[in-house]
Image (cartoon, rainbow, N blue to C red; front, side):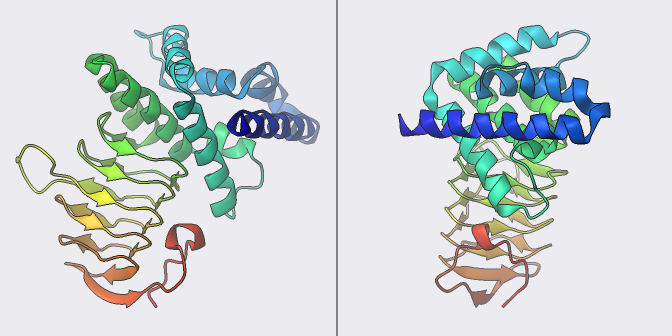
Length: 262
């Protein structure tokens, strides 16, 4: 019940701020109406936006919209994750002035929501369509997440371009990921071969984590680092290969978004 109240309340705020933006930027009035104001729910707007982005000449948006709605309606978990991601983007990104901005314009946010649908398809053995969502998400948003990767909620992918998350990756709740991050394997091994990223972690721009290593809770990976070994809880690592250079004390790097090494 509380989740539904939050979703409905947030959707009302999005609609109200969008009405104000129509007056401020009339050239976008039609865009705001078709993407936000003509929809009666947050889930309807999400389904329409993602479908329109990922549709193609061979797969019409209407068909994808039906699939996305099926996924959202199948479980409250997907919609809850979407709303938590939206609030995370608003709270963590100082450039985000409106709740509607991630929904309309942030490809990192939209790539996460596409992945939630692809993950639902994968779990229901609809692997081919799941791969379609992955492929189009990579093409349109510049973010490549395997449908089988396990992602939590409250995740922020900022900028998004060049982010790659491999098949057996696990990313827990409240993780902040910046452009160019790779969660990859180390070769052609099978089984669990991608990283585990615990809650509260900050993965700075162009950092790379390879193999079945674990990034401990509230750790910070500095920009450009290559991580090949486990990172303990609260540690800051940097370099190629990454070495421990500091420690976060009573802080959550994913929330603070402080990329400096301390």
